[in-house]
Length: 307
Image 1: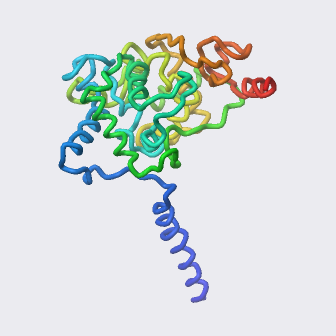
Image 2: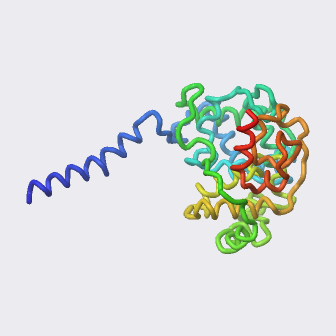
Image 3: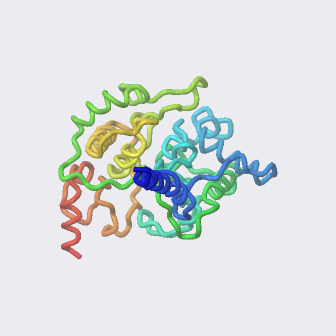
């Protein structure tokens, strides 16, 4: 009996205590650096300013911004959770390590500055920052600091947004509305307008549609992106929706009215256009509705046959 108890204790120690520690120490497992370690230097101050800009973008660059009025009032942190440090929260872990890089959306090699300005123009429905401005340099410094331990070209697990397997059906906006009213209105409001913090300037919970939300050119307007983000992170602080629910509620959110902005230069090579980009032209004969809500499997199979 003692031998059995001892063996069970050893098994528990290895699987519950030692293995998680080993995994956390593995180079593939990413945890963000500690802001307490930022140096008290001019370079360190720039990093901290960059973090502040990411977390409270509206205070500095929003409609009533201290520095400029070039965005819709949302914060970078609303899409890049915990100032871009949350596991599967669309974090910045791999950003500095993978830029500059070629992006099929623009058909060109893009810098980090271009990527940040794309977010300002699309997700924050605003205008670009001067690439030489202190604000741009600060955000670049912060993003580089977040990913400072990531090797060039590497993407650690948990980077970016969770990828979900495609639904075998179209995402259902009616089911999505029911899920939204059950799970999301407490933070985002029944009208999707979000909720400010006590300042009345900074969004605690962002607007999901309407004039202050992301426009139709934003990456999160793609259903695969929003569904994956929802599955990994929502409801905020207690993500428990099923994959099917994530697809449906994402479809409902993206079916609502929002700013429309055309980017005619996107996807210059049509064959590289993702199946869930719902603005034409398309490299296939599927409808706009199917490109927006799915099912995406038939589109993928059709394209494979053409190749």
